[in-house]
Image 1 (cartoon, rainbow, N blue to C red):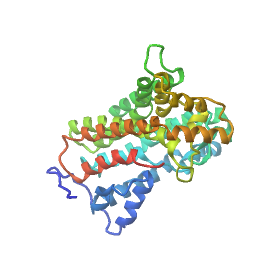
Image 2 (image 1 turned 45 degrees about the vertical axis):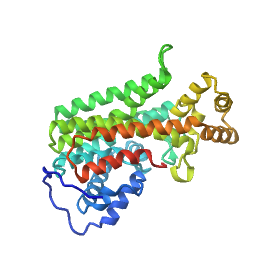
Image 3 (image 1 turned 135 degrees about the horizontal axis):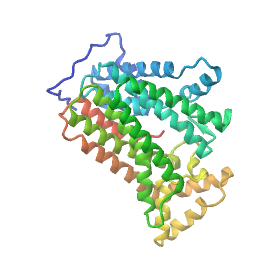
Image 4 (image 1 turned 90 degrees about the horizontal axis):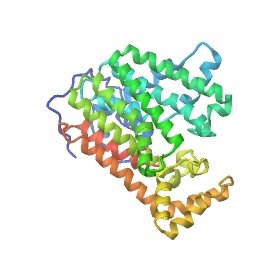
Length: 366
């Protein structure tokens, strides 16, 4: 693979030569469980260390941003942060910044804002879904109760809003519109599709709002605060939305096909909690169309899944049904569409990395 350099190579401070490229690449790969094919970062002597160093700065600022003098506020705010996470959104912000000037301090702050916003939504989502675990740890509402968990999410969002305000009115407007979409996505998921609405189309709309919107904002802010050209910012906005939908669709399939030892999440968690996901929606669609095998699997999926044995039977049956493979194909289609959006960008290592990032969000096991 050859890496063509852009004619408009962005300015930026050189990083210390003490940065270990192999370790830097490993750190990036660990965050997203990137496949071996994520070569553009690994092969570039500048991009790998730059991204890894920026992510380290983001992590440091994240921890500073959620710190509170109040012991309870501090403990609840740190709860999910200390459980880890993929940092998909900050990673995309950093990659997008390399389409402009990645050395600008606003880039790191924007990356912190999008991850804090994401963290805040997780506290709320877990309460609404009655989820017992998140990232392998008990959810905040399991430890402190629903009211404290909701307020912890509010506190984190308040910190995100404060940092965003420091970035200026345009950033505030972007965050506000994103938060509106996050709320609308959750609302529409809660009430479900209308009688005249296709359930699959409704679901794709929900995840575009709940997941795609914030990942789109991550790419948009990264390019915008790196002073990339306006058309590049628009490309990253559209690319991020499509990548976000692909990411959530892959999560749907991983819930059925993933392994607990790798993901930390028991396969079938969404099934047990009654969360509508694409494999189940496609299964229902097939059963309604007269597919007898889909109808048999649906009986297992719709049964009482409170016992581990019943859940395992449902997961195994759904995993083996073509509906799960079809869901993978839909996720890959969205990833391919995201890659196509990058077409107008000049050939560069960063463009290759963004293309590989779109593949990576689908071809993963966690």
